[in-house]
Every structure is written in structure tokens, then in C-alpha cells.
Length: 427
Image (cartoon, rainbow, N blue to C red; front, side, top):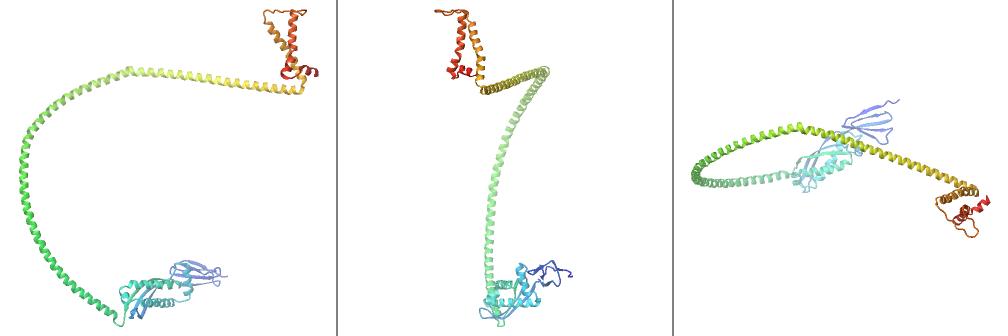
């Protein structure tokens, strides 16, 4: 039985686990994973930063001057992307840290030599930042293919065995000394000029100060004269103001007296207004409030009466409305009953045909004869004329009534086309 193991690693290393259950190796950084011995294999690789010293000796620059350059680089295994970390494991998993450092140092030294060959001594010496950035860019691209990341690169030292840099220093030193002497002379010249300008400014200040003193004296005299004039004016104004103030005080006393009279009158008016208010309150208590109570009582009674009348009228209207609806319903029921009766009669007539017609005819003859007789009975007097041997009197009148009844079938046949006699015979 194979017992599993729990493998752990810190953030500065990676565990590469392969074998059963993995088509591609599992990469674990700063975590844990379960592994089965004999079925799976695992290895550890450090992610610590490697500090490398890159030295290039006797490298000829673009001017043909041999230089020795020493730089320092910080390199580590890249964990920015799983593919890059997998690439680093592919190249360095079985290598020691010393072997990795040796390989990276050789790569950086080659790039450092290549960059030195494209630059002049002055550019390398004066613009080290440019040299650092070029080496960093070129080395970063190359080492990224190996799964490594260049964190920084800095040039430490530049030297040569032919004295080129020393000569540059001596030339620069001479230039600095020359500039220093020129600067000293310019400084002394500037000092003299500034001293003369300071003296000139001093004299200008002295003359300006004297001028200001004279102007101050003149202004003082002018101000003194103006003040004296203002004092005399104010004195005259004070004399006139005394008389004016005396008149104002007298006028104010008169105004106070008038205001006292006005206050007294206002007091009397207030007393009268209070008396009027007292009278109004008395009238309101004795007359107005009872009148308003009586008015409210009458209004309440009138409103109740009006409401009673309205309710009675509404009740009558509602009663008439319900009565009308009942009559309408009765009429409608009668009409429906009559229509149903007529319908049934029509159905019966249709079924019995001639017998039904005969029945109607026999029922209608007495009514027709009765109607004719009732009409004749309302006549006050009848005058009958006879010719030849015709009958007269009641017999004649009866014969006329019977003739009218006998003519009914002919009239019906003329109006409707129904032959009653034929229908009676058929029956």
C-alpha cells in the first residue's frame, strides 16, 4: 500500500510534480500538494534572487580603446507566467545554483561586451544610465527565453590599462581649473562692479533722503497752515453751531410739549376705544350671541325640514320608479303571454286549418251582428222607404242586418282572398 505524502514549499521555491494523474508537470509555488511515492516524482527548485558580478576585461570600444568594465546584476527564476516558469524548470531543474549562476553570468558578460563594442569611452563614462538600460534590455529578452527574469543591472567600475580615462580626467581637470580661474576673475570683476554700484546707490539714497526731508518740511508748513485755517473755521462754525443748537433745543422743547398733548389725546382715544369695545362685548353677550343661537336653531330646523322633504321626495320618486318598473314588468309579461297565446293559436289554426277558420267565423258573426244592432239601437228614429211589395218595419230592419252579415264572407274574400264559404263547406 502506497501512503501519500504532503509536500509543502515556501514562496521562495517551486515544487515540480509529475507522474500518475498529470499529463503536464504540476508547478507549486508557496503552497502544498499531495504526492504518492513510486507513482509520482517531484523536485524542488529555488526562486531566490541571484546576485551576479559580470566582469568584461580588455573589451575594445567603438574607438578601439580597451576597457575593463565590472557590473552587478540581480537575476531570478521568473514566476510571472506559468509558461515561463515551466521553461525555467525545463532548463534548470537538475542544475545547481552555481551552474545556473555560471550560465547567466556568461550570458550577461557576452551582452555586456557586445554593448561596449558599440559605444565610445566618453558615452560609457558620462552616460552610464544609457549603457545600463541597453544591457538590461538585451539581457532581459535573451534570459526570458530561458525562463529567467533580470531584476536590475548596474555598472560598478570602468578602468583601462592605457591611461585613456586618466587623460580624460586630466583634461577635464585642466578645464575645471581654467574655468575656476576665469570664474575667480569674473567674480572679482563682478565684486568691483557691485561695489561701485553700491556706492552709487548710497549717494542716490542720501540725495533722495535730503530731498524727502525738504519735502517733509514743506508739507509740514502746508499742513500747519491748513490746520490753522481749519481751526479758525471750526471755531466760527462752533459759534454759529451754539446759536443753532440753542434754537434746536427750543424747537425740541416745543415738540416735546406737542407730543405730550398728542399722548394725552391718544390716551383719551384709547379710553374711548376700550369703552366702545366694552359696549360691543356687552351687546355681543346680550344681543348678538342669543340672536346667533336662535339663528342656528332656526337654520337647524330648516335644514332638517329640507332634508325631510328631500327624503320624502326621493322616497316618492323611488316608489314611482319601482311602480313603473313593476307595471312595465307586468305589461311585458302580459305581452309575452299574449304573444305565446297567439303563437299557440296560430299553431292550432295551422293544425286544424278549415275547422279553426270555421270556429273563428262562427265566433265572429254574433259579435258583428251585435255591433250592427248596437249601432242601430243608438238611433232615435228610423225612417224606412219601401217600393213595390218589399217588406217594411222591423222585419225589413232585421233583413238589412242579416244582409250585412251575409256580405261578410264576400268582403273577407275581397280583402284577403280567403273564401270562408268554401272553407265552411270543406269542414
